[in-house]
Amino acid sequence: MNCQPTETPPPELVDIEALRERYRQERLKRLNPDATGQYIRARGKFARVYASDPHMPVIPRDPIVEERDVAILGAGWSGLLAAYHLKQAGVTTFRNIDHAGDWGGVWYWNRYPGIQCDNDAYCYLPLLEETGFMPSKKFADGREILDYMKLIAGRYGLGAHALFHTRVTGLRWDAASGRWRICTDRGDDIKARFVVMANGLLNMPKLPGIPGIGDFRGKMFHTSRWEYDYTGGSNANPVLDKLADKRVAIIGTGATAIQATPYLGRYAKQLYVLQRTPSTVDERHNPPTDPQWAASLQPGWQKARKRNFHRAAMERFARGEPDLICDIWTEINRNLSAELEAEGWPELSIQEFVARREVVDYRVMERLRARVEAMVQDRRTADALKPWYRFLCKRPASNDDFYPTFNRPNVQLIDVSDTRGVERMTQNGFVANGVEVEIDCMIFASGFEVTSDLDQRWGIDVIEGRGGVSLYDHWRDGYTTLHGIMTRGFPNLCFTGYVQSALNASTTEQMSGHTHHVAHIIQEALARGATEVEPSRQAEDEWVRHVRETAIDAQIFLRECTPSYFNGESSEKPRLYAGEPYGPGWDAFTALLQTWRDNGDLAGLVVTKTSQPAGETVPVP
Ligand code: NDP
Image (cartoon, rainbow, N blue to C red; front, side, top):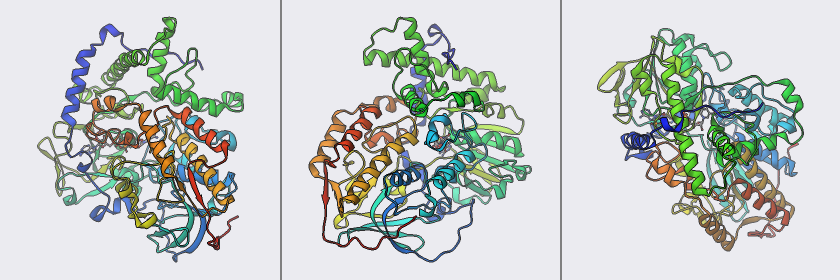
């Protein structure tokens, strides 16, 4: 398909100075000095939010005492890809450990009605060419993704390696045995030579710290623990018929709420949508996969498509490069490329390019605000649903049913932006804008711990490296790593994630790049009979210096953004990107790692071999 630029209001109708000022005012209204402190942890009284599993019963079992070459903490995409790459590298004695009851990570937990991936499935789902799987449509359903993850686990024989419904509570390096000792909430004692931290970004639900939240006597749950027993229906058939006599409120209008709200509106007797900051919601356009197109794909197509997506969403198109993705994520660069083409593709400095991009950004956001106006009948509601910030200050959404939901007589939007959220909860409901509203059920679409401190985010009480030093203390004043993969003082511990490594527009591509590299290190270390592998001080210092010297300052953009988890909820102290992403970008990063692997000397890692016996390992077929 030839993707055309999307029509947006002409520049003469877009008053950029007025918009800048409006964005500034809307941001100021939402700034909250408590930043991440405004949320309640899923601990203590609210531990159930994290610990409970509405999807599968937890079967009692005896504690396990065993030893493996590798323990992979997590069985979501990063854990699955770590297992896949280890297996490909010939390492077979590993174990995925996850507190979920199966593979899937976020796709295991999040089964709320309407759940779909907001990214192009032909990019998002990894290994499509290897497995021969083809998603049924552009934006895949959550169930299809979950099934595909299980398919990968089955196809590559990873299932026998997994320990589910098991939460890791402690990780301690035992120098005497050269092993990590892993404690779990099941009383297990697992020893592993290597540990891969594959515990994801969105695994710890958070609740808004609304005064009186503990007083509410009705039903409450978080969207990542959807209780179909209460609402009726199922993930496969989300007919929420038990809500027919219920007054329901949902807190939040982020990516999750955008998808779940239309179902609540359809089935609940009364629905209140409590909104603090509106999302950008474009049309979905989610056609089924065209079999002719699928049959026409040539080897290497997925890699090429992912590269195209990354360039479109996070960098810029080259002259003549088509937009293969053609959705809201790529609109700004698509439109800008068309403009540049019409001008004969002038040479632009970075500053000039950024300035041009900003103008297109205002026009795209004007288009999205006009979309609300066209779809929502009540003027006040439509006005409240309009987003006033730059594109990508919040995660863009697309959904055809969200706005029409507000035309239903049983649905009411309550704007709580003036009070920075819901004022308080009572025994019978909530208070917003000074009015108490009685409800039967409160659903929290309030997101996850993304920018809070690592111990909060990971939920692992203890991670102790050499000399009993806590990883949380080790990184208290800033990250120190080699390639974002290992840190000195924590031998044989590998990370996957957002710290001091490059970002890719597709999270699964990013995880795949990291876990491929991790598998290489582990395979090499085991082949060399190494007992300890960790970065040298010099290599680590050089990497940290290089990352900082080449950093691109995204903070100006983020500081001007309305608060979100992208900037740590405060706009003052950007946090997600405090992981210090690698400025030269994804292609440079992966090329650097590839060269490093090709050199074959594990440069910058100190590899220690002691006479310590390897110990009994448990081979898994
Ligand atoms: P978010 O963190 O994006 O949204 C949380 C929502 O809760 C926001 O609207 C927030 O408002 C609101 N909120 C928080 N506290 C209060 C309060 N006290 N009063 C009123 N409102 C409040 O969480 P989501 O679960 O929506 O999404 C998290 C991430 O999950 C996404 O960004 C995405 O990465 C992923 N996701 C991915 C999907 C996919 O398609 N791949 C689909 C769904 C989610 P405010 O904005 O003002 O803070």
